[in-house]
Length: 147
Image (cartoon, rainbow, N blue to C red; front, side, top):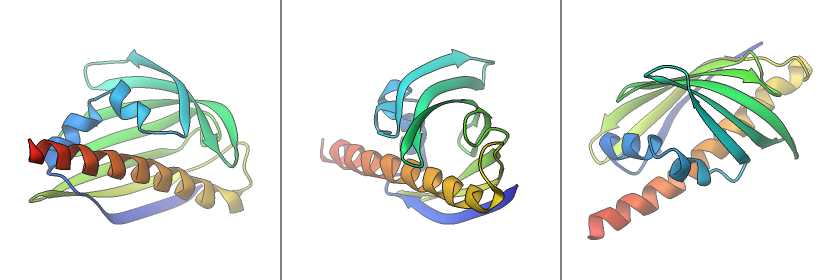
């Protein structure tokens, strides 16, 4: 198990816009080229089950996440199936005027990876997710501001 703290990333849009994007379901999901064949299921009023095939470590494999949303403060994720099954992490959002800071805290584990590889795979996941979201959020927010 590896504890990760990834602090200080920033989206170039205010927090209200970021949460609108997060709740975009298919629009949000289509920004992520490292997932395909998504399936969404309602678990509760604040929690959804998200299944997909995910591209990690150079290959596609099925996974399932339980994602709970607490706007505008946090998203809590538990990885139920897949290479990082058993991992639990929280995204914390902080408004900074026209920008939104995002910090991630979590414990990452795997039943299939050696302990020495868990951190690299978890960071690969976090970096690709952030890069995809940041690009789409920036473009969509600029487009909205120009209207």
